[in-house]
Image (tube, rainbow, N blue to C red):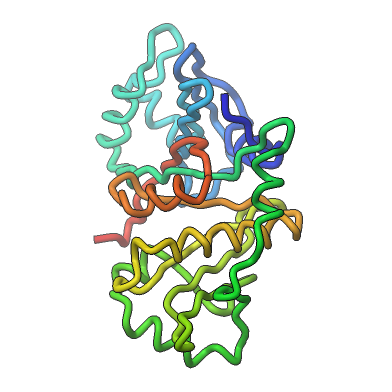
Length: 251
């Protein structure tokens, strides 16, 4: 079974701490008044135990109970719960695949990441690279930029360069939720994809994160097959699937 750093488990326990209203082998549901409004329904399916964890704001739990969808005396299934949420007008956003650097004992995977030599084509970006970064964005589609969410002024940003001096890809990380996890975004020019540049970027950023005592988090939508392939090529392991409601102002 794949293991991950303790900080990962600790972070994902937090949303599901509260009053348990249902629990069986496959599904557990808690009421957590500390959830943010935009995460009033939080669902996490963990691969290690094939279990689905659900956290609800009290108001949503009460609405489900009034519909009979949270009956203490009966069996609750994930599919029935999703139908009931939909009837309340709560539409869940597509699940994010959550990837992290695996944490085996002995720590061979992490040691390989840390001992891997840095590519001379990759370096940390600074404000002096703003023009090159803008040029990279100009030659990248809006959809790719929206999915990547890379910013040169994030907590740390890295770029990969061609020998000609052209910036052909970038990645950035920013703190996620607490002081132990950084979330990653990455993209390259469409013309250089499939050549391993993005993989090297992910591993370089992962090395930097580990040297700064952070855990690298990589998220991908289920239908983004190229992104999933990149995570696997970089040596990241799938932790689980995370869902929250679609924002009300989304089309």
